[in-house]
Image 1 (tube, rainbow over the protein chains, first blue to last red):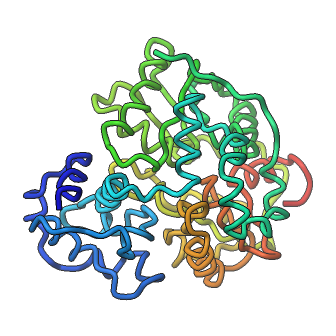
Image 2 (cartoon, rainbow over the protein chains, first blue to last red):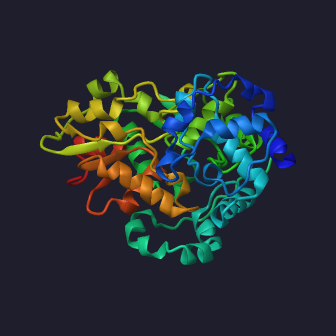
Length: 152
Length: 226
């Protein structure tokens, strides 16, 4: 429960802000995660956050939310559910090796230097079956030296 | 006109073709793009802490201050983050799609048309949502295609999610969502987002995936067939 509470502090919302939710479930009717895991209902997640209940990392919405903002676009209050999910992921520590490599590059170079991310994520990419897509990705390949952003 | 240019990390790497395309299209129209000096990553969608995320783009706006008031950011994630960080609306943070208006096409030199070709203009998510940062004309790609004689397909899926955001987290998610878009559309996929390009390209099989800038340059007579 504490993690869920703390996650909200990372967003622009407070728990009580979700009291405006009308329960219309239009977010559920447009949610992209329903194409992957039928029955997904962001409204139910908001309700639980409002009530101070726990949200588990294994829940489909937390795992699969693509940040498409279809829910926000449809919501009468335009609640930014993807940003709540991102905060929950942060608090629940669900970062993938790729995301860790991305952030590692940003903190070292100030930018995402793709060769660095690629090297760091090699075990994950090999294990995850990404190699078979390599031929499709030839046009993305290229090499440039990294730019290191000055620290301010 | 001179614009401050924020290419973002993808455009210096895997989306280098979009970067070159933007620079060429702007140069052909007589516009100058000058990079924001020593810009840093915008954080994309990888940071759960809103303040931390906004901090990246606020730093970029500080670096632009005194140099530019008009900033162009082609990557949808960078564009959204920069625009949201500009709370006082000190800058005009613009997506290139909002600059391809009547005046642009009136000044554009046409060398080819798109007759007999079918295209699926695919916007994805961040160019269209949330509405505070959405582009102004949400039919700009369709209008371009029909203006030059091409046929438009896939209207019903143009705003669906390709799952590109998850491609290096759980690629099965991306595969399923991209295939939903691909199955409900025809012809060449036209995108603006580097992540949409990668998601579509990975699962599109024989179908071509191009950036909107490739399409513009093709119409202007650059390169060979699309």
